[in-house]
Structures are given as C-alpha cells and as structure tokens.
Image (cartoon, rainbow, N blue to C red; front, side, top):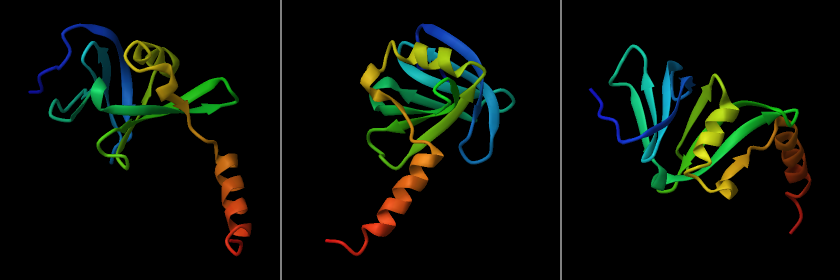
Length: 127
C-alpha cells in the first residue's frame, strides 16, 4: 500500500490518468505533493513532489474549456504525466497555491502545430 506524502489535503477529485493505459482514480492535491491513486489497484499510484514539477501545460479549447493537463518534471524534461479530472479548472486553481502562475501554461493547439510544421517546411532550404 502506498503512503501519502501529504500531511494536509487541499483538494480531492475523481480523475483519469493517461500514462500508458488509461486508469481511473483520484487526484489529491496537498501541501507536499500532487498525488494520483487508482481506485481498484492501490499499487498503481503517482506521487509528484511540488519541487520536482517544472511546469503544467493545459489543453484549452475555445479559450474556455480545459480538457486535460500534463505535468512536466524538472529532472526528466522528456517525461510528463497527463491527467483529466472532473473539474480541471478547479484542480489547476488548487495547484496554483503551490506552483507559481508563470509555470502554469497553455499548451499549443492543433492549428498552431500545423502552422509551425508548414513554416518549418519552407525554412528548410534557407540558412
């Protein structure tokens, strides 16, 4: 059984983890860490201390809806964890107490990805 890192829990909500196979559980935001626990398998958990989080990127649609968010780690820049909760906006507001606001970012949209790809095609031959 996993031991919680938090001594005080600020916010708890049902969530989905998108690491490997989707798993369903609860996200706990507390004073020491961001924690995810699977509902059915207690060994399937993710505990990320606040000091290890580099930034959080949220997928925002129509400047209103947050569909999911990803937590990027400092020591492993290519490693991230994706989550979606019942209320992503409230979850990110609870994270704001422990993560500075400049490290809560909006991820680029699909249109921006396509635009950057087209621009890079035309800049390949130039020096």
